[in-house]
Amino acid sequence: MLEAFMKTYAIERVFHAELDNLIFDIKSLSALLEHIGKGLFCPRDSIHRGIASLVYVNDVSRLEYMNNWFRNNHKLVKNDMELLGYMLMHEEGFYSLPIESSFGKPSMVNWTYIDKDKVQGVFDAAAMGQYLFGVDPDNISGPLYNGFVNENALIDLKALNFKFEKKSNVLFVKYEANQGWVRCYNLHIHSKVFKKLARFYWFLKVIEASNQERRSLISHNIVNWRIFYRVKQKLRIYIEHMVN
Image (cartoon, rainbow, N blue to C red; front, side):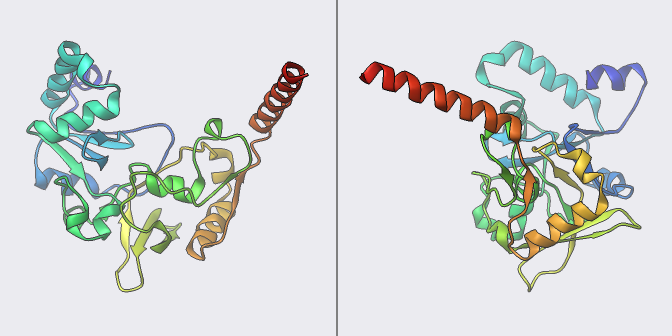
C-alpha cells in the first residue's frame, strides 16, 4: 500500500509509522537521512528482524523490490519483521537505524547500523517503549506494569534515563551517568495506553518513575484478568471432577 501511495501521488520521500507509536520532533530528520543514502530506513532489534515502528523511504524502487521479492519468496519469511530483516541483511538500499543498543559496546551488536551521531538520535524498535509502558495487555492475564525487558535488549535498560521537553516536543534519552543526552525519535507503545498518554502529567510520571527504577501501574487489565480467572476456575473444577 505504501508503494502504491508513493507512486500514485508522485511522493519522493515519506515517513511511515505504525499506529502504536509516539512520534516526537522529526523536522530535521529527513535532511539527515538524505545525506546517508537512498532507500528504506528502519530500526532493527536483531540480525534477523527489522521493526517498522518508524520507517523512512526516499527511494520507492526499494519498496517495489521488497514487495516483488516477497511475492516470489514468501515461504522464506514468517512475517513483515523477518522480511525487513532479510532485506536489511542481504540487499542494497536498506539501512538499519540505531536503537538503544547503540549506547553499548559495538561488539554487542552483530549487524551494521547507522551511527547515532549521524542522525543525532536513536529510535525505538520495541524495547524502550515496552520498558516504559509495558507490553500488549492481551498477552498477559493480570495488571500491567512498566519495567518489561524485551528478549532482544542488549543493554541494561535500567541504566536508561529519559526527559521530555514539551515546548519543542523532543524526547531525550541517555545511558548511564557518563553519557550525554540524545534524541529519541519515537516510542513504540505496545500497551496501546494512548488515552492515558494524552494526559501529559501521567506520561511524565511514568518516565520519572522509570528514571528512579520505581514500578508504575500502566493498566489494570481487568477484562483479561477476569477471563483468566474464569478459565482457571473452570479448569480447577474440571480437574477436581476428573479426580473424583
